[in-house]
Image (tube, rainbow, N blue to C red; front, side, top):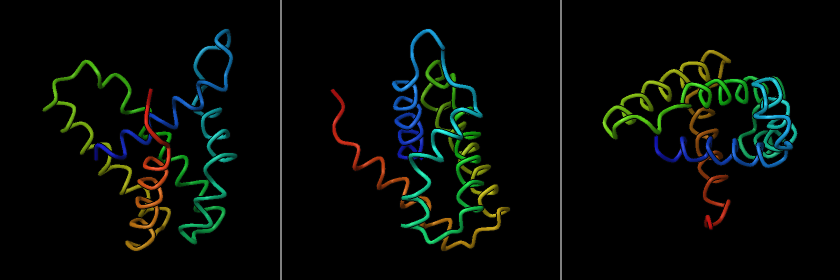
Length: 122
């Protein structure tokens, strides 16, 4: 769960760095489009899901990211509980796409891989 939260945070931070400070944070629609450009090709290649499934996975990821905002102010116990709820809901959305259990596992592995390949933070 911590890995997924970290990945979503990384993706959000990268997307913010591409948007000028005057524009403010990107809207969910802008985030989806940025992720479709950056994440979608690798997601399709590594997980063997269709283009349409990848679009829906990205939408679920952005929705989960939006739900995780404001978690910094929570206690560790509250944060862990909230992350579990968000991750469970995201998994339900993945299965509703529909993705098989193996595809859901492949998507989660891809997300872990993306996070691990990002490199150390300064």
